[in-house]
Amino acid sequence: MTDFFTMEPMKYYAPAASMDREAFHKKLEQMANSGNYIMSLKTDGNWARGIITPERSVLQTRGISVKTHTYGEIQDKVMFWDSVVNAFSKPTVILGEIFREGDIDRDIGSILRCLTDKALSRQKNNPLHWRIFDVLCYEGKELIDCGVEERVSYIPKVVAQINSPLVEGVKYEPMDETFFDKMNDIFAAGGEGAVVYKKSAKYEPGKRGPHAWDSCKVKQEISNDVDAVITGLIPCEKSYNGKDIGHWELWENSRTGQLVFGEYFGAYQNGEPYIPVSRNYFNGFCGAIQVSVYDKNNNLIPLCAVAGLTDEFKINLRDDFDSWYLCPVTIGGMMVSTAGANDDGIGISIRHPYLKRIRRDDLNPSDCTLKKILAQEN
Image (cartoon, rainbow, N blue to C red):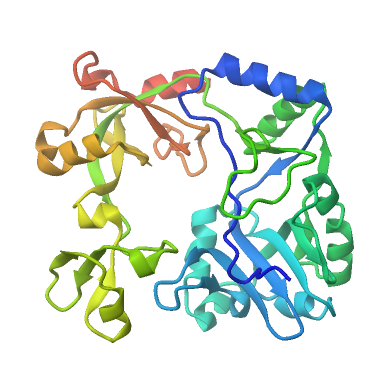
């Protein structure tokens, strides 16, 4: 039987942010007209894999624990797990997202990173839910070599057996000629978008599917680019969270703070003061840039943090940030979020932003205003 406990999660294809919107639209139109795809609503949450066997049952996160070198386990931090374990007598493997209405993935992650008692106390009056979107094994029957259309047909059975108000299933429907109308309805209702899958696509551990476009996230794009200025650097994650820790070569002596290059895994296992660190941390890179815009009183208002920067840009920011402070940039994103904004628009933000262009020589910082964003939205 497949070792689901150590199996690397499948990755999902997404077109490059720089892909021409018209070309992307035409590709989606071809997919919709082919009759070979299904779709589901895209939601915000934390990926979690439930593995239930007679010998051992766990709810795993996508990330690797630095301490255990295995996938993190969160089954003690959710209130629905007993219902899941008691529902199956033979091996069953379920994929889903931990979510809570009104929260985004960052909020969910902050709860799941707490110690067990605190994680549960933060759910006392509003527990976390689990939304199932795939089934890799059902009551001893392995499904990873089946197409996604067959795999998701097991979701209603799984949800019915679990029979918990905290567990629900993702609903799939054909991706057909009504696709763009459905997407408009989703966006109008404030939804994030959809995920589309080729019906015959198998589950490919650690890969993005056998072929590009076997799966694809379709998210709302802001209708106009946003101009902003760089006002700060967001620190990167220090810890290395990858799977290949045994051959990782970027380490820090936790006693002296010295960064060292080489294979120190053996020393780490022996209790010596070495910890694996991320590539960004080792190189002194930031994790993201903070960008802001000017309000009507000419005050800088933080807009969002933008990650996904090139190494060349990170080096420039590291070595001479002063020369990049208030540098204009153009960003794209999924949508303009007004949640938490006041009547003047202060508190507005861009969801899932990405850097499109650096405008150091062709845009005045004073032109990067909140007023322009609000005008686009009205």
